[in-house]
Image 1 (cartoon, rainbow, N blue to C red):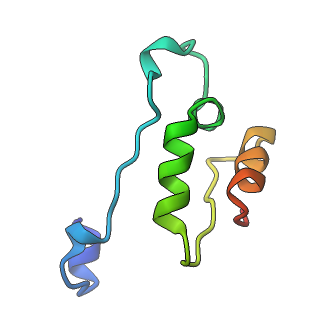
Image 2 (cartoon, rainbow, N blue to C red):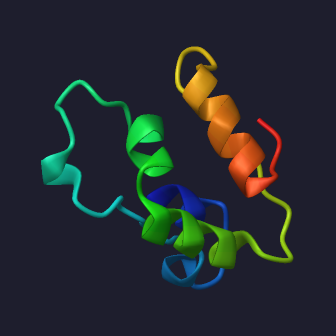
Image 3 (tube, rainbow, N blue to C red):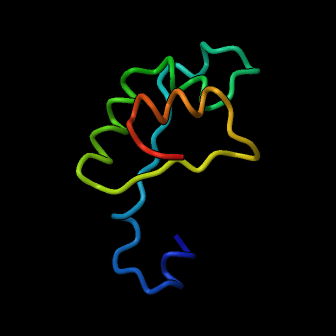
Length: 79
């Protein structure tokens, strides 16, 4: 929020949405966030609704994984 405030963004709390995959406690601990998203249909639906009609892109971690590519295809957004 501080970065948005420094950038003179009006009402920064309305610009940020935190989305957490459902049932994260049921997934193995070695699953990445991308893997959890693939198996979380409610979360993917929520993300689709948040980005509908807007420009969006995926910012991967240190390297692009196959799971990042799958999510990109599922959401129809570039990486």
